[in-house]
Length: 494
Image: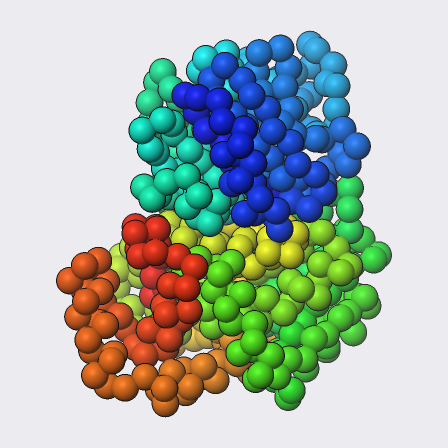
């Protein structure tokens, strides 16, 4: 819902202002900077909850916070933990800071949602990031202070020493680093697939319900595939005015499938058809915001870019189907895993890596237009359920991928949706191989292998193809290698 930036150990409002100016797209509704004994906090606001009272930095007595994200159980937390003192706002931000004042750093274990936030209390400071890294956070240092920000582009104005703040961790100036979450599934006491199907329906319905909390309109990214259609159907039960958005090139499969689903649900549906030339024109902006040249991310970021641009004209919040393929083994390459233990290990790995792969793409491209992306499949309860089920129930060598999901919602969705094969967003949108062909024509064999050898030597990075080099050259127009390679994720499924 916002962009944050700040520095600990010194006051530096000019530097924090310069950092905030690099990420104004994340928060077009207001800006605030606060000098405190322990440092300077800065905030660009995207107003979603408590439009009037949720301005940041927010403080009570000697404790101040800047916060990016949404806490979906904040009302329950207020009732359970803060009933002894009336709140001054209706904001989830106030709930976090008051929980911190009451419980200290361990308050993060109470929060159900997505978050990156920093707190200064007197001369002490605290910083934390949500379990899966849905919201981004980076940090870096120089001789004068410890800096942090929502995006790499904000930190480059103050330091070259940039690293990703790890998901599921917090840091306290007196207590140091702590991990409070890891993707480590516990087997569940669910005896058969039928009970699993019922549990999946319940968990996802709750996750979507929670993510409809907002004081502004909420929409849905609708590709017409299984995952987004499930989310759209569940969200449609929560409101009579759901906006849905679909994009693609002329004749793309996603546009036709999304149109059918939107008609069935009665959504306020919007479409954007883009051309090959528009893709090429947008590519530098896409890569600038994405802060990665990973081919799979860039490919899917292009249709995301056009969708976010369109959706931001109607809503401030959008639900997406991110995460279903990781926790229910939806990717085609997972079909080759015969051993359930190996399949489970791979699903855990790709889920734990989402913070700098698909979640980075979802956040960066949506927030480029001041649009918040929410991901119901990655609710911590949904993840625990999905990964806690036996891996053999999710293996799909001899049956369709994500069979459990298909069966769970087969009675709610058209047969052509529940039976639609998994496709990468870029493929369904019709833009799958356009730029890879251009890269193949423009980059010579010698150029590719020379650059591949250099990157392998300098960064231990194996350039996968000419398409990646094409994207890398665009990224290098705004970012140096040392800013990107230490933080960049690598998608396993292209």
